[in-house]
Length: 133
Image 1 (cartoon, rainbow, N blue to C red):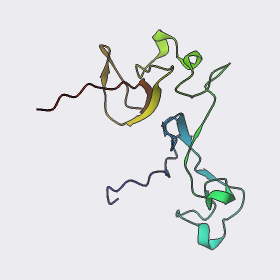
Image 2: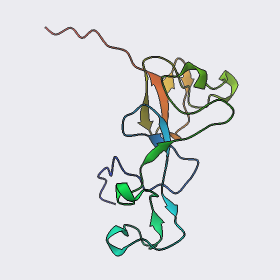
Image 3: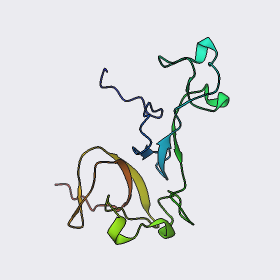
């Protein structure tokens, strides 16, 4: 591992780990999976020849895609209806107008609540008044 980002692509096989879609509008899961057949040689990026993303138009490169979290909820950050109930909001997320997805692998403190390091979450974005001398 060179420490370089592979964004906008992903190589996560843990289905519980999330990241942001390339436009930062959704929390997503990596589309990396084991396909039914081997990929053409030019598209084999992993040690297993059948492992990759599911879209040929993306050259079988895996990337983060939005997903459904259950009844009437998905992972669109700007939709306030996606806000998890407070007792299950393990990442102290804030869904609604002006929210965007942020990648994080460490714990943050948001509004006095500490986040779990799941990989990404939706948080309110605001502009700061920066005063320069």
